[in-house]
Image 1 (cartoon, rainbow, N blue to C red):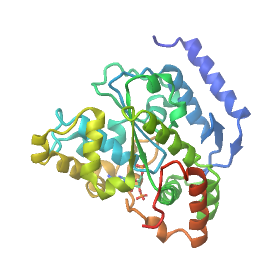
Image 2 (cartoon, helix red, strand yellow):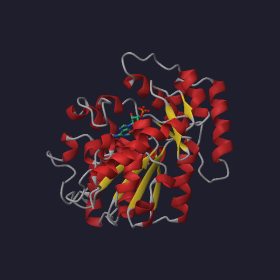
Image 3 (tube, helix red, strand yellow):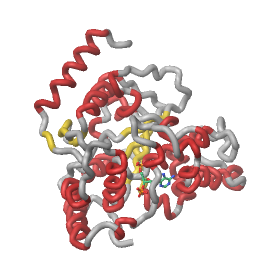
Image 4 (cartoon, rainbow, N blue to C red):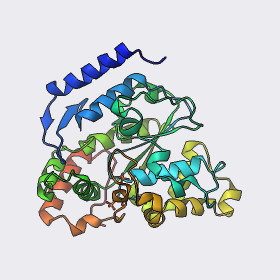
Amino acid sequence: MAPTLEEQQKLTDECTELPLSLPKEKGWRTLHLYQFQGFWCQSAEIQSIMSFQKHFQANDTDIVVASIPKSGTTWLKALAFAVSNRHRFVPNSKSHPLLNSNPHDLVPFLEYKLYANNQLPDLTNISEPRLFGTHIPFASLGNSIQNSDAKIVYICRNPLDTFVSSWHFLNKVKPESGSPISMEEAFDMYCKGIVGFGPFWDHMLGYWKESLLRPNKVLFLKYEDMKEDGAFQLKKLAKFLGFPFTLEEERGGVVENIAKLCCFENMKKLEVNKIGSSIGNFENKNLFRKAEVGDWVNYLSPKMVERLSKVIEERLGGSGLGFEVFP
Ligand code: A3P
């Protein structure tokens, strides 16, 4: 049932007042970060997350693509869309939606798009399976997603590369008036866990543990594995989502066609990904940078590598979630 205007106003008032009582830190861009439900985010995000938590009703057939920013979200959204819609949209067709729409428009963010700016989306007419994206940590996804049969696919990336990618991105999308954040300053905050939706270790561990407990509910993928053996990971993804490739499809090259359609080189050169803004006012062109594994070697000093490796070991060591720091 749609909320009344009064209910909406009450939520808006709560959201406006809440940040005042939360721990606050200087953000990477101009806006502050607040510690909300154990993770760091901006005040506008708190409002949309609270609205999403209150109103979103998951369907058992829903697919949620989850990640911490700059881990390969755009890529995974494209793959999940192409895999689950391949009977409607043939992957090598010249009119495939991914050739004309950015993946973030086809798989919208719950917090940045659907529930942003005080909107209450009508999700009833979306064709199944409905695909959504989110950066919200597992613990804050709410009962509806957690307890339904909705599937969650998580993409995780080596924190060293994620940091470098985040730093580049946030410096590109910062408002003209803002001064750039130095790599050293951003790095210090990252190591302390102060980054959007972080600490990164809590974000990863939340989904990682759930994927071990409920492997049919959460699929945990790694960016590096997808780069190394895309076809294998794609088959894993399709099977998990309930749309396994048939032998005939495999023989017919469908797996390769999807990998090709969604690969970095193809996506980066598409006109639709060079123009427009699909996530708030972030320009789409900034979503595609280098897509290299181990690019951190070009930016981080040995001291930085030592410090972040220590954080990774302390926070993630023993979890079974290993990263090869040295490529
Ligand atoms: P780099 O900054 O290292 O190049 P997100 O989509 O979560 O914002 O992550 C962005 C990172 O994924 C960027 O990494 C970007 O270049 C890379 N990326 C974007 N599209 C990709 C694709 N189709 N395949 C592989 N990597 C991709």
